[in-house]
Every structure is written in structure tokens, then in C-alpha cells.
Image (spheres, helix red, strand yellow):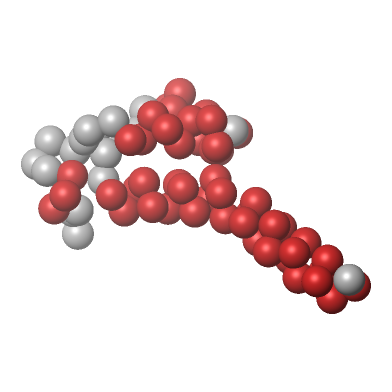
Length: 68
């Protein structure tokens, strides 16, 4: 189902951007903030880019609090 927030003329992710998103997601995710990309695509890629770092941060904080 198309994302209504993207509008009728939603942009497609080209090959170069897709390669960048897979290789260095934290760098290339910012290109998705331009108008025309679906919000669902933005959410998935932001989660892919920053989710692992957030998990590592939370785990480190929990371990630090446990051994303090």
C-alpha cells in the first residue's frame, strides 16, 4: 500500500543511494529527508542506521550500572 504522506509522485531509491544506504547508512540516511521519499522508508532506514548504536549504548549503560 503506498504511503499517502509521500504523495502521488514518490521518489524511487536509485542504485547508488541504495548502495550507500547499505554500506554507510548513518551517512546516506540524510538524503532521504528530501521531499518525495515515503515516511515508511525513512523510518526503516533510520532504524537500520541508528538502531544498533542505540542498542549498544543502552546495553553499555546497563552493564555500567550493574558493576558500579
